[in-house]
Picture 1 (spheres, helix red, strand yellow):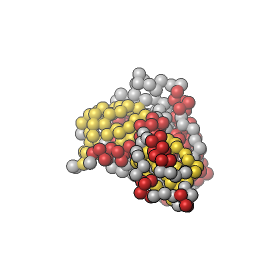
Picture 2: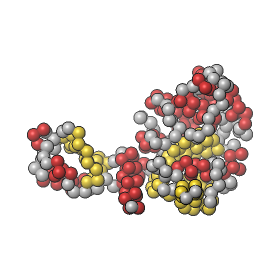
Picture 3: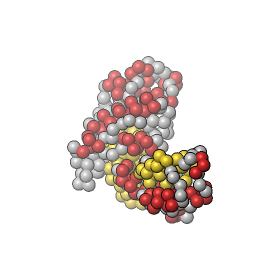
Length: 320
């Protein structure tokens, strides 16, 4: 996925700690029965940021978005959008949202449903502009119940951007889209960020978070596990990737490879070995000490997906 994060646009605006937050969570809790979905959650979002919200299933992402949008009340703590109650900011037309839950009206055309969304927005955009921006002008006369999953997502995005919002909240926005549609979607969203809007999106596509977000917030068990740039999240995970090939007659003892020092993960596919290590230098030194002669040796930092897995697994191990 070849995309450019929105850092350039965000860099020219005041997005630092001194800027008045667009979103502010302060020691927020929320339980569903006996399950604590949000547990003392605190974080701020600032103007112009594009923020990815990540976390394993059950981490509290959906509950956090529900609280942010005023769909559920917090049990304790405070949630503020632009310094006000969430519903007040939404009623003022400052927030657009694209959620997984909730269906679209059927037996109406795409144009009709988008026109309704525009008519209801206090700071509406022209319908044709919204259709074009969302990439659905070509299917404007098609009935909503005849759309593909990816096309439905585009209609939801159109509704989320039907007016001049200052904050756009997206929950798994590219589910059902093919690669080309996903790239076009994120190009459109980068334009929104470049105009000064704050964007918060939850996604299971970690390559999207790595490519698009200028900040990543990782949740686990309703708390912030990590918060920073994608590079900072990767660095925090600590481990590095090591890969190499071994000749068929020099594969060595499998058990010896598995006991190399500082390993956090081991994988072998034919002659290719892939490792993760908390101390790559020591692991590689021990590898040569085994008398092996690895070919095509590569040592690199973790990708965001591997870093995410490493952080959440470490948290789970610490809690057990």
